[in-house]
Length: 187
Image 1 (cartoon, helix red, strand yellow):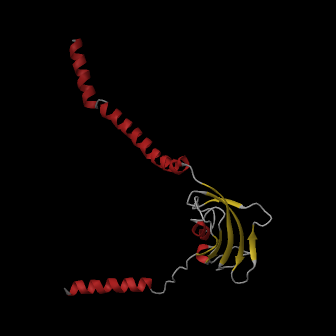
Image 2 (cartoon, rainbow, N blue to C red):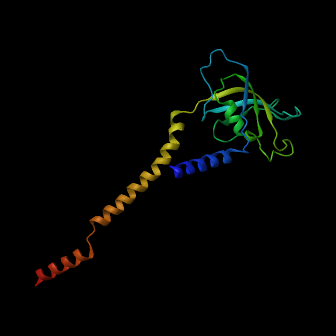
Image 3 (cartoon, helix red, strand yellow):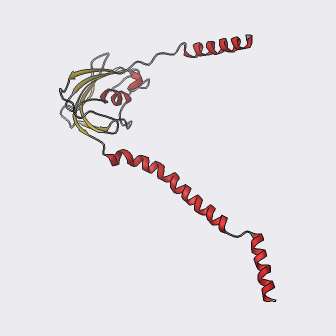
């Protein structure tokens, strides 16, 4: 009983000490500026989005990037083509919807920043509007899984073929036995 109590106390101490001192990760904040009444298409991982945006530093309000006067930005949601704050903040967005996304450094450019425009540990604010949304087709969704599965299956079939060929091949002992038998028949 005493041993169990000591083990329990050691575990509790370890758990408490390992979580002590760790900062809680701040979350991405989403502010919906214009909501679509009827949202039939909403953004999901794998969809191709075209977004108009303006990116600002929260501390100074300085704009560091914008698509104003340029073509909107196109990327695949959830494919790690953008900072993770965008993947989180744009998920579930409806076509035509406008959102402000407040991104803490952990989901933006982190401790390094992106010099010279984005300093280290900068909190970012993006004003976004979803201009177009192309849903991923069934083939596009399933193809990576088929590719992933087909390699082991092909390798397995090849290995079985080799095993079967070796299994059917006569052993040295059987070959010698057959040669002796053939030699006896000749006599």
